[in-house]
Image (tube, rainbow, N blue to C red; front, side, top):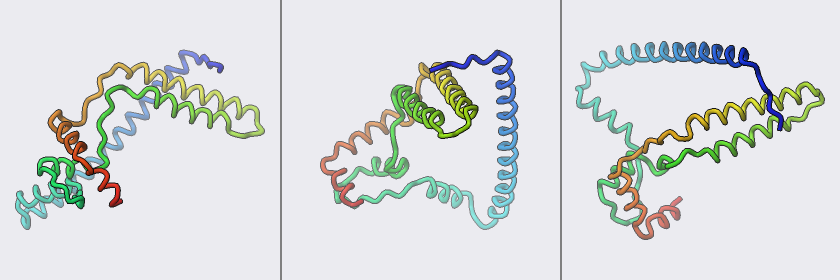
Length: 180
């Protein structure tokens, strides 16, 4: 594979362009959130007369909880049942290590598709190879920058133990898969 050595001016201009684009996107999102909060504030002030604060809190709690039905007939502790209802059945633990190999593999597949794009124009073929190499270089730089960062766990140790205990209940997942 051939590496395209782009000049420092290109990188500087690209960095400035990316910064401007990110700032523009951030400001647009900030404006939308501001508009949304104003709309919600008006709606809340209109509903305060009809609903008490406790009713609003109960409604919010209901919408955050996912519904998981226990049709297995096996008794599940209430604390585990509440945790599964909160997290949902498709919950996954955060990875322990940075998934560099998976990222490189998927990036390489995409880059190969870009490079193998059928065309009669030789300039387009060369341009596609250059684009694929740029994508590889960007992904490698991000992997090098983030590989040693610590990945924050998405559960507490207590929640992790409850889920592992739930997983160890005999015949639980066998019966769950029969239902689907």
